[in-house]
Image 1: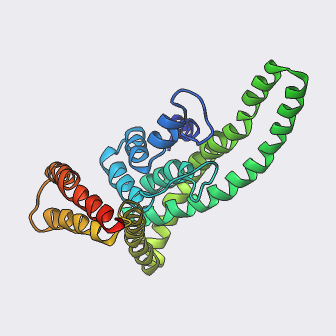
Image 2: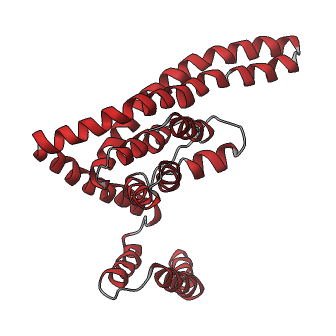
Image 3: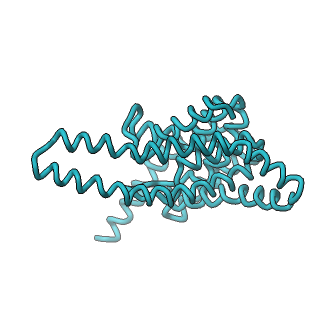
Length: 262
């Protein structure tokens, strides 16, 4: 990996961090460019292999498809998942399954680093409290800028060094595992193939709280797997089914509930 490639990927890692306010903000950063699917496309574009980058991004996205981060809660660190795990897997020519396992590992490390940074950033809050007592608005604004130093080091400098120095290591590690312990690569591939199912299961628990709603999921699965309906077609069918369900059946459910209460 060349210096400019590592620097550009590290820049995206920083701009997409949860606490980075610049350019795209939280909405365009954390919820767009840090999503593994988008990051896979960006990494593939920078490293010259968009197709493989997207394929890896799709596999990793499946694991974290139901990830939500209310407040400061970060169960998995997508910054490291997307801009360390995916690029290193890409340059190491790892399979999507192995890339998933590698990315999950970086996600766990990232959570620990994030917690350490958050504890350290608490010191800035005390400085802001002091400025607030003095009525120093300019000081409060300045502290908010200074607090970005730690985020830039964690999300920019560290990823740059890991990507620049770790690309060769990642390639050698994958080659070593393929030649010396191929069973371990097989294990990582199987694990990486199973983890997306966990992500989808968590998503289903969120969007289908009632068991009867799962029938729509299985209907879509049958359309794709057995009837070979394209994704766009399934989306159109799903929209029509949602409209019909809302206009007719959901109202009947409400009326029956009100009748029982009476």
